[in-house]
Image (cartoon, rainbow, N blue to C red; front, side, top):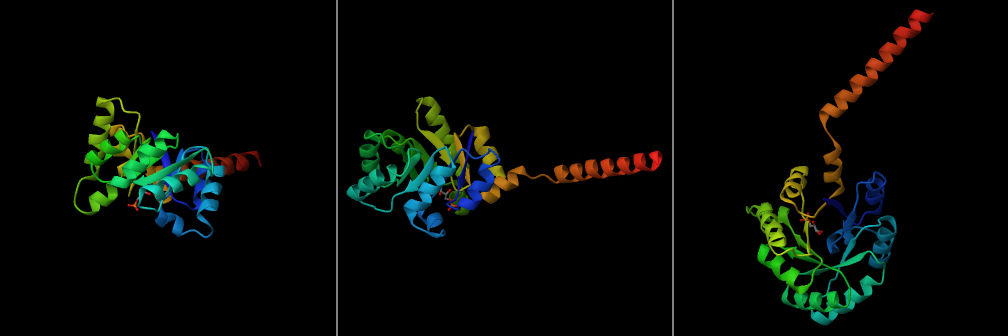
Length: 221
Ligand code: E4P
């Protein structure tokens, strides 16, 4: 399973990328708006840091605007994937730009049927937002189960990219189901590394090491 960071913050990206655990990045207008600088510059800097796919989202809601933005965004770097919302004009734009060789991540997916339509239109990735479904009392993971089944039934090339991840358990469940990618905030990836027994285990090893060193030193004196 590929692990992506869901952030436009370069410092967070660099920190985790150095550990070799970041396969790609997703951004959205909310995340980019939090960072200083121009949109294109932010995306270009991220694309330089991370070799894998970097999603950058269009903000137009009509066909012409989405196509024009997609063409522009795809010139920033070869690893840019254009994020387009699943609305009727978005499906039309996805069909048009994917036909030009521009890869699309269809976003704001909240049902498996929306994901199926996105795949048919030519999206390379579908992004169901599971945390937002959980927030309104639905089981977000059910959409992932359905989409993974549909992907496998029809051998679709479209990758299931699980978004709106809130905690490590979401990542684990998505991995067990067979989702292709999980994208998460940096804090979730950091929590995935942590376990209290690792910390106490390491402390004990180091304490024992120091104790033994002191004991040996006192014998040789
Ligand atoms: C995914 O591509 C989205 O950017 C993201 O996961 C949305 O998550 P949120 O619900 O935490 O905003």
